[in-house]
Length: 253
Image 1: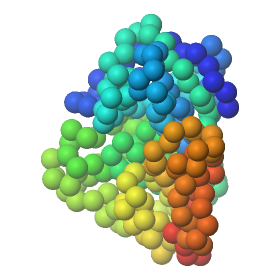
Image 2: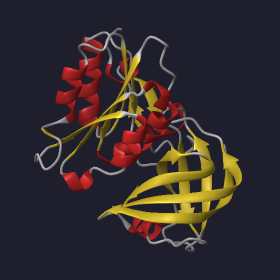
Image 3: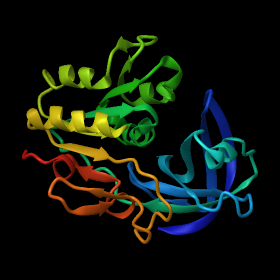
Image 4: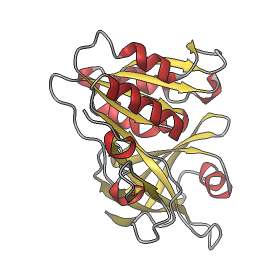
């Protein structure tokens, strides 16, 4: 992990409030799916802190998915090709590889799709099952990229696209008929807890990528500490963001 200067190559609006930001750095970012970057634009002193983003791509060119929620993300979404960034990456721990006899099942909720797009691309020869849920069709982004690497099942809470309901319902149905399964998930905390319960009830290994606000990305500020099932604390930025679900939610495989 180190800090580097990067140049924006593309800012592609995917839907209202969502943009894919691609950039190239002075040195390639060698990262695993699930790892993230701390990103800051060249905009002076405000906003002061960088923002944490899961990597969608890595290497000579890297990419992040920006959802506009505040001033920092708004500025990032409005960058132009040629603008500069400061990028600290790769940060944190990524997903582990599935065993040869395991069917990878990826479960994404909302903007939690970002690290799973990266994971799906790395597992493309195995055609993983990708379950992607959001509130409405407008919140389902990068679906074409997912279809190139995985079998995609979409769910929306309002039924505007794909199956109507929660993505966790689709997961419960997917756990049967696929032999040995390994589950990977990223999304809102309530979704992750249900995903973990469903997977563990089926005795399937499950890894979850936790989402948290971060100030440093290095484990120094302790602002992203979360409580584990045994009552201890772990920092999402350096102990995660990917954790074994049993560590976070308890239970035995």
